[in-house]
Image (cartoon, rainbow, N blue to C red; front, side, top):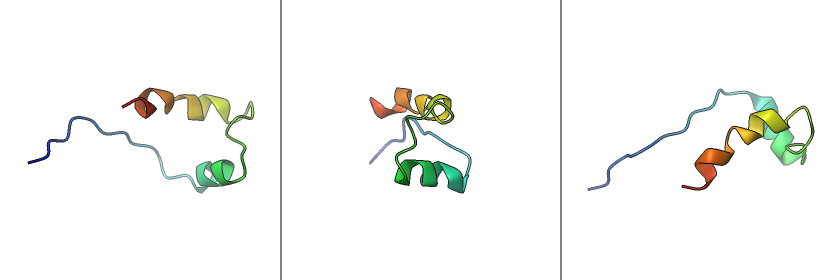
Length: 43
């Protein structure tokens, strides 16, 4: 049986997906938001 050990949540904002699709995640405006996901990427 699987056991959930962690979860990550984010608000539903369509602009986040648009920023990813258009390669804007590295821009100064978006950097703080996407930096918040870094911790969860290593797991």
